Length: 138
Image 1: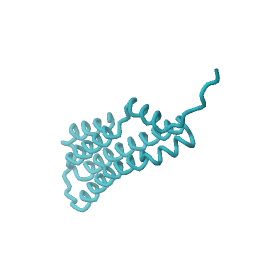
Image 2: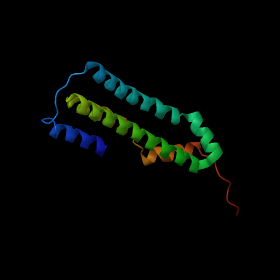
Image 3: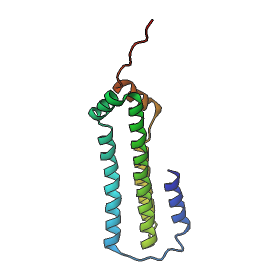
Image 4: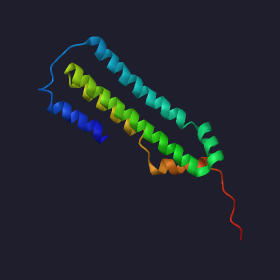
């Protein structure tokens, strides 16, 4: 999140140094890449957090496997968000239009907020999908 916001600040402060160069096909390609990554991150999250998949992981690997899966997927989604912000900034560098960075940052922040993990949601997943362990002997 911080990197995306910093890229927007750099684009805002550097807008006097950018040379305006209109390149409609390149701008459209970069915006489609941002859109593709934004929607792809949602599909990625829904696929990785599908209940059947989490149920299988919980049965085979237990709570440790579930935690590992939740952690890896969250990091992957953070990379999606960072890539979106970087593409927006690259579009600004190429075309000189700082609006690309602002749009990329906005979409990046939506992706990052959508995929932001909360302790309660992770605990709920672990409690719901992990197999109950053996009962302690008395």
